[in-house]
Image 1 (cartoon, rainbow, N blue to C red):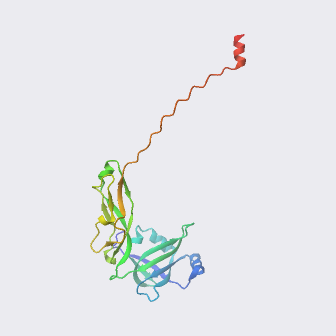
Image 2 (tube, rainbow, N blue to C red):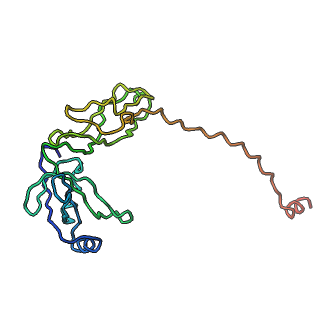
Image 3 (cartoon, rainbow, N blue to C red):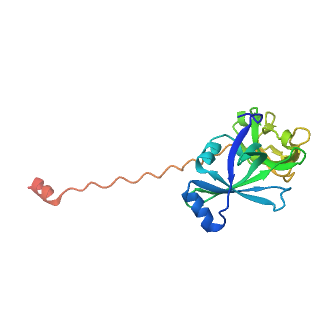
Length: 217
């Protein structure tokens, strides 16, 4: 899905709070959520979202990298998914954090890294490793890039590209360690040949004693 397409999320305000309230919401088919905002006097608003709506969102590729239109009881706001908390055992979604964004306020958001080209080192037998598949960037909401494109065409075996070497659109800043490795071409794996096993000596033939005696007679 292109970033220019509007993705609307239907949310409702909730009164249920605490662990008991969260369990009640889940039994009713809702997931507890919170909207954080710089301008809110309380700093956050308790919300709920239907499980069906959550499942729809998660089927959209890269949903956590998109600006969303939040429809809260019919009121339109803009925001992003900041965090999705899951039950570590059952992998069920427990809670979702949204963050409200304003056109005139910079935000931090993760965007995917996309590889472009075929590295010379790969053609020579090396292995391309994407060490950092996502990067956190800072920019205004309307300047969020679809992805950070990394051209690996000229990389030889042993070469790497670091954060400081990336080219990003104007107005976008990467909020990561400049020395962090993004892509590296590693040498081909060497499979050790198994040493030939020593031939086992041929087992001596055994002749049954009774048969031998019979033949002698």
